[in-house]
Length: 301
Image (cartoon, rainbow, N blue to C red; front, top):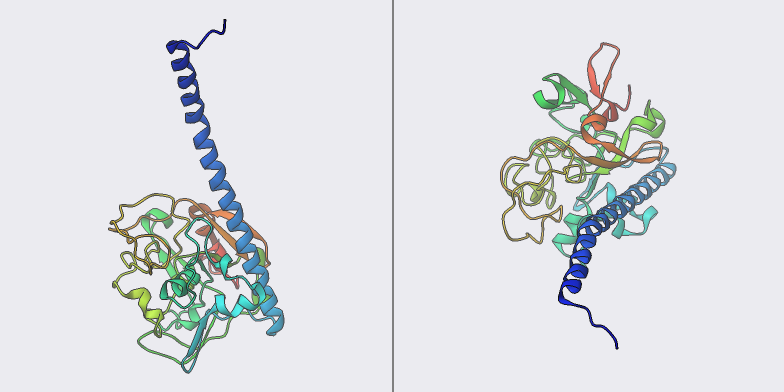
């Protein structure tokens, strides 16, 4: 005679399954996140290869950050796209895919707002007289002023309101430490927020809500530096997802903390890697006058 399971035995089996699920589900979730991190590394590697191919066709010049010619304008993503032939890799794998309607504002913003290439200070009216930007934070730099600069220039008319000044990009051979100089990485908008406060329409839409921190179209950037995906700490967000949100995240409330996770980047020499934001991206290198610079943002030291 076949013996049936008793209620106790069934409960034991269910308990074992629940324990295994509690153990394995986080492992599966972590594996999924790791797969997305690997995809992000592959994406940014392709961005770098496309940028280098662009440079080989344009006298060794690094792409412009933004180009405006009359009513025509584009960011580096569009300039490098002929060498990628895939807009899909401009969407970060940890965020939602680009909208299917390529004529929509949401597609336009998101295609240019998951990855960024740092803008040269020479292209920014406030920073140009100095030749550098600066970053100063008690928690991040001990109150010291760290200088930093980008590699990509601006092609277009000067505009006082947008603090834009025409400036060429650096060439690949002008970069002193190509393996330690950032070319492209995860970012809250196409230029890491290193310039162009309210550039030509539609770019000024990134500033619709006024400040960097609370802008619905730039929700995970800070006042002057990189986001969003290096930022692992969660912040309180309002309900409702803005379909035009550049990062693909809903609008977040309150001031955001500095990032404390990893960011994925490709260097000027073309190698892609993951770098700890605090210890890597903001790492220090001193110039000949012993002035501190951000290691990954000192292209001519």
